[in-house]
Length: 595
Image (cartoon, rainbow, N blue to C red; front, top):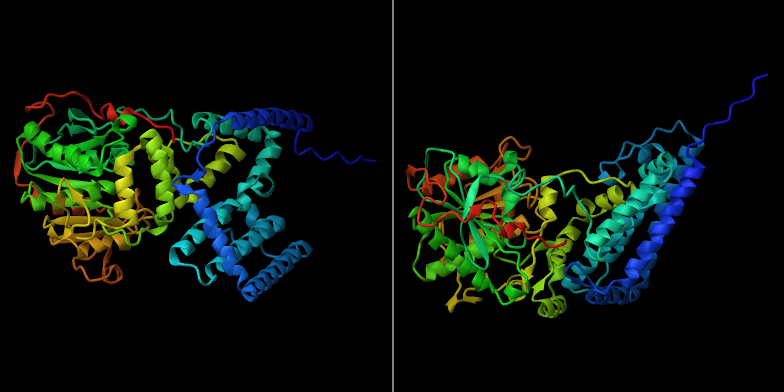
């Protein structure tokens, strides 16, 4: 008689017990570290939690004033729960029932979410709950639009946070890893968590990529060049030509100072700067300082004078050319537009063409960024910045990450802390983790005059060095590049510039988002849309726009070459009146802030 064999254990209970003991011991250390940290202001990114709480109190009051709507919503929710339970019980009672097709939602890509009846039920009840919560909040009547937007945004944050994929007991992939490793994944995850807390000095600074995989000037930001000039706010980098002849008018790139310029110079295969050099441009780029308290009083006006205007003087000394073609990226584009209005008032046309990457000048609709910039939250930030002289880099970084939490927060929580894995090397995420601080005076001016009061679009709404700024006076030929999935500068809002500038303009819409749609080299998967007409509304423009496969970079080069002013012999950095100071990418860009 054969004795039935004992089924193999799915895990080693002794090993698992030891691992859980180690997790518990390190958890005690974690709690102690939390208790000994100095309290930070009640914020999440740029959000003031008191302001968020006030919005939800108002929401609750409005909901309670309409109990019938609450009851109806609850009845609908329980009806959907009952249907989900019925479907799940059918799967359990009749195992042959065909499993659902795996979800396109990346949170539920594991096969178990579709093939296992229990996990399918967990997923379905979550999706039902999420839909019901959001619907209930959005149907509340009587909220002013700004409060409604704030409540909707933070409700989405909550709904995303409670997804079953974010928890050990309801994520099948995490459960498998825990059983297979005897809990080692959780121990490694706790170690990762402690390391991130230590790196953030008590604040959770999620590691998004292998930070040791990249070295500035070697395998990232490595296009050859030299720093040829510098001042308090920036270094000016000139890149080494690779063609015997170059376009006569140099190309000046004005990046945002919220991030570092090398988003345009990642790897050789996706470096816009390297590609532009190969097309025969003499490329100069501003590398902004990462400010500390010494630059606390630097203003938006200072950024104009010590940024693009200073660069014009330096470029003339370096290569003997008074005129340039210019590119402004995001906030750098906002500064470029302001500079052009200033130069126009001074009757100067030293910038012969302007290219704007994902740039807002009309801040009427800034998407979800609006939830961070009401009066209460700006006043709180101003008080906080006054104490230090600057805004910590993590405030802006966290806010931007919250705009895409399911891409930039929760996947890393799962990978790093629940699965206990190390993040993979990714150049774009390395750059994203290398944010900069903001000088107090400049950032207060920017938030108030652009985001909060939308003064830039008002003729004379802001004044720079005594000059009223009027964007309608900008006559510089302009190329406007926006991206269809932009969560920072919504493309329909960037299109508003076509109704403001008094200039010949070309508007191009790239696929993807704020970064990937710009860093879109030839051979990439993203295409773009083009329409030479500029109708009144962005939707009218898109309706007749032609989709074009491939990168928009060559189309831009064809456009900007019309303003190149012919060709001259190639110009090496340091060969003019400005001697080379140091190799690109320079020392300013190497100053890091913890994010």
